[in-house]
Image (cartoon, rainbow, N blue to C red; front, side, top):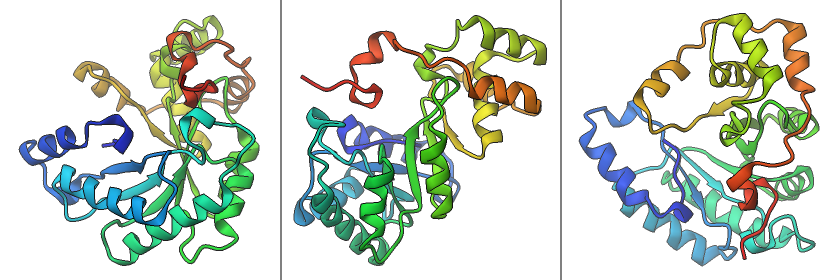
Length: 244
């Protein structure tokens, strides 16, 4: 389960955990420190609040939602020193066993290097936007070089890829949906794919990925023309825009 302080649904996720009937140790819960929090004390308080809202003794993975506040996403100010302070608070939570793993999200190479330059505990994950038509291999390979797992969010481009004729033709060759093809693509690249659906049937279908994409088709998918317009999602900062 992937949530975040910014989503405002940690309490709801916590309630779902309590009533779902699945043992805690069989669940993997991720939450994210809000992008606007850049002070040690504020981050520490937010972690304790997340634990309380989720009703958990520990969080499996805690990540920094963004290197910059959303209104300044990919702007000139990089918040290098501030992110080091955030990381120190997360390291403290890790050492106190409040969280089992700590990582990053939306961090570019120099953002990651900044954390690596002074950390005691290395980032374990970088959660980034990655999908067919937008696979930032230099960043991915940089993370791998430093033993940082890469988790791909929006692996089907928030649905923008579903009507792509060339991608659909490849999916048809394998007798699978475009969503299944895109998820398999991410897995074969070596990414952890983080898919989202509110439809139980789609959830079951998305979990059926027992096929292999050929090397030639993987290369085609890797080099698919970049999506220029994510539709209604284009204005969200994780797709390159800024909050107003």
